[in-house]
Image (cartoon, rainbow, N blue to C red; front, side):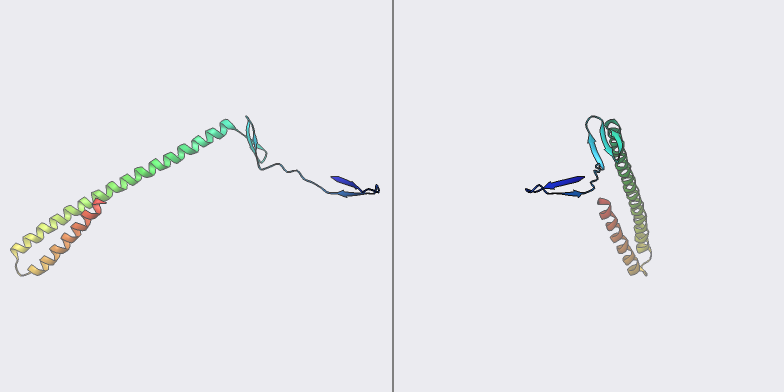
Length: 127
């Protein structure tokens, strides 16, 4: 671009500058869509792409929740199995208490420890 400036004595001076007009990276083109770095992306394609992405996100959320429910179910089953094992051990220890009075204190300690463990598993199962 050349600019010429005149003063009142009709003297002039020229200046030259190079100007580059750069198109924006993303531009909106009405009903057709928009361009990204020179490539036209049509509205139907964009809408389809967004719907596919939305569907994939929803699918991932669903699968994650399903996996979470399965994990919680397995944990509950494990706690229930542990509770059954603890109940059997408590019964065995109670039998030992009645049959063998010599180891009474040791058996009482084991019985109390198992009952505390049972209470903890019940508290965790309530969560």
